[in-house]
Length: 353
Image (cartoon, rainbow, N blue to C red; front, side, top):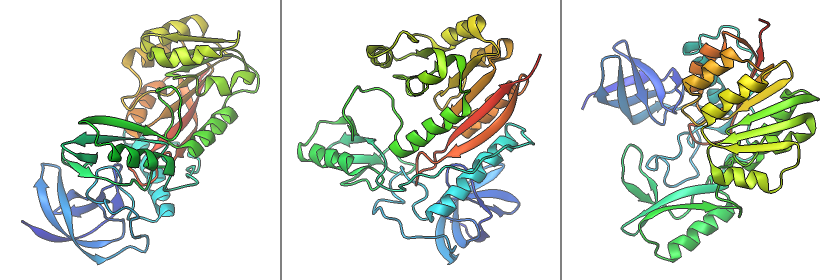
């Protein structure tokens, strides 16, 4: 197995350090920009290579001791070897680089990244897997479980649930453990950053708007917190259980509809998009569908707030939306400390026809 010495130049989205070997980008997990390392090249492709760390020759001043005994074997976390302040710097840089490379955005109205008050003990739920008596998470790059007694990024209440599950010798399957009771519907994983996201979005919307359309609304995460700012609120989601929960305590100002989000949103934009309409979209990692992107071009609302958990698909969508909208602000938010995931909130304004 080939052994080479490299200087890590950057850390890519996903958490792997990046170096150059024989003119080719080489990705090395668990390394930090500025480190000199010895690595084994384990996979060669036409345009890049992948390597595994052999020895740290010159460690970074940002390197810290991971708090999790499973780190490096468990596939869940990518950054426990990096001081949290530097993790934030890396994530903000990754968002900017992705939007420049894929989105071709030159004028980048980036705001400072919003940090998490807790970099450990923050997750309000985890999903563990059980197979042949092993209870835990999948190993890095393997569909094989690692037995986990405690997850350091999960809240104490969640780890109590894990301890209880382990004591009952559960059947093989998947188990979602939660800190809070309530309907089993989508919710943000980090309570404190979710509150910061709500406040941020509240600051982005107008003080007195006519209509808010909240697409991918779940149980009304944004809509219900913004009721006082709009005359009407319409929420759209595919999850009938989430829509039922939203309707349980709805007011006469609120309408929540379950169905095909792409089609319902297109219809709503065609009917109601105007100079007094604000739309919030919070799609899954796949981003917006082509039909939705086209609908925004045909029927642009005055304001569009795009919440993304995937900078790459966000960048792809912004290429299209840029035809009718101007980007007002881009705010990374660290909803998932220690992991490679990044949340981004983008405010767009419709251009005059």
